[in-house]
Image (tube, rainbow, N blue to C red; front, side):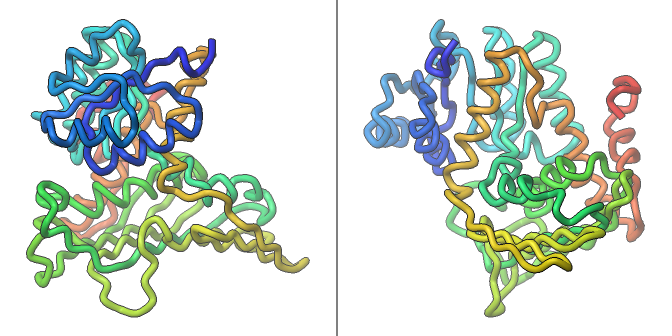
Amino acid sequence: MSREEWGIAVVGLGGIARHHLQSYQSRGLRVVGGADVDEIRGHAAREAFDLPFVTTDPEALIARPDVRVVDLTVPHVMEIRRPLVEAAARHGKALFVQKPLMPTLKDARVLVEIAEASDVPMMVNQNSIFAPQALRIGERFGAIGEPYYFQIDNRAWVDPTAHPWFGKSERWVNSDMAIHHYALVRHWFGDAESVSAHLARDPSQPGVKGETLSAAMIRFKSGVSGLVVNNWCYRGPEKHPHPNELILLQGSNGTISAHASEVVISTAGGEERLSVEGSWFPDAFGSAMAHFVDALDGGTPFLCEARDNLKSLAIAEAGYRSAAERREVRVEEALEEAGIQAEGADFW
């Protein structure tokens, strides 16, 4: 079966959906149509991407027989996402959900269980794993030997005052942005053991309700440890804004230093510079969906499966607890608090 036979419904046609649609077209992925509660926004997306069908009724789109995958790009608010996940589950459609699945681990678990109850596959769009720079790093991961340390540095001034919902909830940078990096380092190093985090909110950012800075030291069961910094209240001159954050990996044989356009491998034997083709926006979105569709078509496992993604969310959850209680927090504490420990030993 070809990719074209896996009809995609895009539910939510705001700004992020445009990256999805642009990248899907370039990869031969077929979008059946889109849905948005805002008729004007839906019409604009239809004109921009020549969508064959657009509606303000999401279930009318989800129920179409030519839809096999539902791409949820709506805000991560339970009152918005839950009815859509339930609709997809009712109609037996696979789900591709924009990260974060939900800002809290408990709410994310609810959505996972809805999909599982109907045996509906769900992938979380943790597209950092599919970003061109991350894929390039993966190609040469073995060059540095046994990894023992990593560092990700994302810093810029971001104040979404004019945005209708982004940054307006109690949680922000740690749950909405750092989750990209938590999923990526889990992909590289396995399951996390503990988190020690510092969170802060810059009072000069009135358009933000949650934290504007997240710095998390993560220890992995594999023995690797590292620091993930997402500083969206940085006014200094040397900014590294998303998606051009700096990535550093250190191993027994050398170091990988990377950003959006170049990966540098430094070992005792010298330095190797690799260019990065493509860009995170929009290429990672199309690569993630193509991976999902190909796995569904072949009946094979896929990355960022929703229940497994709970362990990435648990890093963020442990970070919130760590910052509040000023201590190192085991990731399993966060999972247990969300009632996930009873899901079976294979989940650990």
